[in-house]
Length: 189
Ligand SMILES: [Ca+2]
Ligand SMILES: [Ca+2]
Image (tube, rainbow, N blue to C red; front, side, top):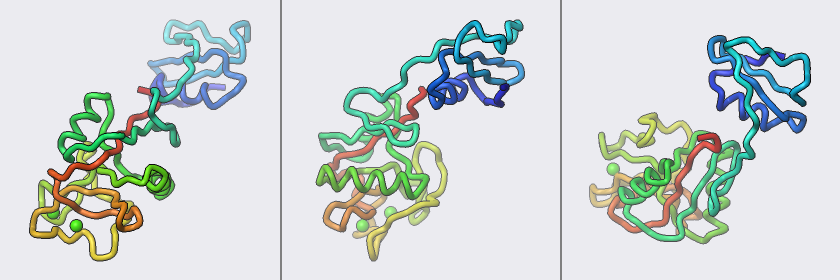
């Protein structure tokens, strides 16, 4: 069975989903992925374009949580929004970007579990009132604003936090405020 796959990493992800997968091969020219239960199988294609890979056990780093193919780090320490972003980049990750309601609920659940407010990756630093995910530079399709937020209080709130005191909904806050923060990176990276 040839599976269309945009990258060898995606092929690895497919292998990871099948218990029977003990090897996978990838054809980078045609962007095709093959899953094998063993190496003797006659489905293995030894054409020049094919390379065979052994699956690696994939898991999140220590202290990171797995949710739907992404790893999340809930910081135990507090930083400004900018310093939080720098910390995430240093860990080959980004300040979390919320793209689905299941992900939003996962993050909220973790914040409740840790009893903490957290910076997330949304800002209106570029244009007041226009909220964007900072790393991907995309607009917000999923939000969880607190009532009467965002309010740009005192004309100086450009960074978004999950706010403990408002039932872990979202609030725009002063970017220099010290908060815990959430980093995100794909499990295959
Ligand atoms: Ca603002
Ligand atoms: Ca606010």
